[in-house]
Length: 285
Image (cartoon, rainbow, N blue to C red; front, top):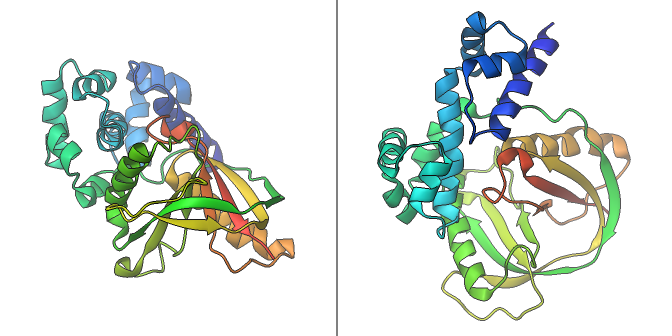
């Protein structure tokens, strides 16, 4: 019964994620879950830890804030209207209540620790990807433009913004230049001050010295186990855990002396979180 309950709630969370710009009424979502509307609101709050209204608002604000930070060509007015607000002023009031910053102040300099803290109620609640399929393939050397984030993981957003700015100036659009992350360190076991993450874009161009700190590097070719994850970074973390904790010990394979990395096939906020596709690569001997 517990599994059926989880499945029905997962169905609701996915429906919310896929229809954030639509009118998500209590009747509609209770129907998706196949629960009585007289009890659904209480069941939802017990499952997620927040009310239905608060959860929907958080999901909409999360997508809006990602656009503010990483898609600076999108106007605040357009983001407000796309998020379901009648005016930029109404959007700004709610945004400031949640994050302590106006949308324009957040766009200029996001307070990432506060931003991250506000989304704690909705982390880990999205539908779980139940089946994983791992394939083994051989990849060639990949020359990359690399920016290493060093330090507190809560501030990765600042490094991402710096890399996006450099990438635009260099003309390396994600449509034509594959996007990678290199996981040098484990998020859960590395002290924040020592944490490193590689932000990379495939390119054969020479990288001239720059203020952003982007350098030339190579992702070495060879055999890799590849696992595709669909959804948020929380789903990505679960997929990576499966690859290391379940697949690798039972595979008879040995990892190569290069950190795991991933290729971002589709990126948030270009797509909604449930549409984000990421391929995880585990280098093998």
